[in-house]
Length: 225
Image 1: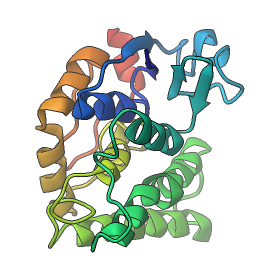
Image 2: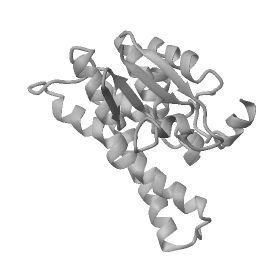
Image 3: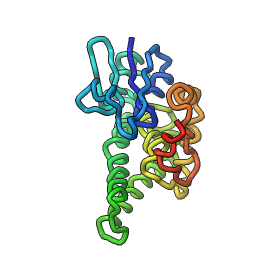
Image 4: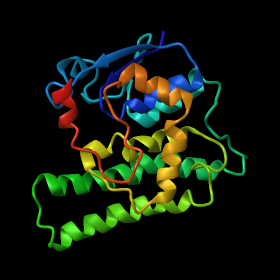
């Protein structure tokens, strides 16, 4: 059976969400942070030492996008992906890879600047603030006239992008008040039954941030655990 290793309050929430959306059987193994970073139990599974990680027989696989594609093709009969030849195929590809290729790295660079207490008046700091806004604005603009990122159909592109704009905000403190289309999309996605099942099974203590202001830093969640 497929085994999903989920580190609580992390981007592996997307893999649990995916499995619930596809309705496939899987074993969920939950790992708690130790105390903030990945515990030894995650580090022993794969050299990358970070979640998500899945195991399927003799296979151990890391990297979120690779895992999502593997599960869709091996267990989901291609569901939640858009095939070549479909009018929204290029849109699907772009937004599927945008989350980890552009959006999340841009937000993490800003997080790094804040973590080392960079000078908010410096040109570099202002650049990363502007970059993060530009990347987020592109998502908001896309959702202005589209129900989901690839069009009217909910796909794995939405699953890939939900983390940076929900759970990820506990790390990056992103304020989404200026992005109404993203907020409406977050509401649509997080109200899906499969997302609610992920939440109940994997991160029941996590309050999903669906409004504009940034949530508190994720370490506040660890204190409650």
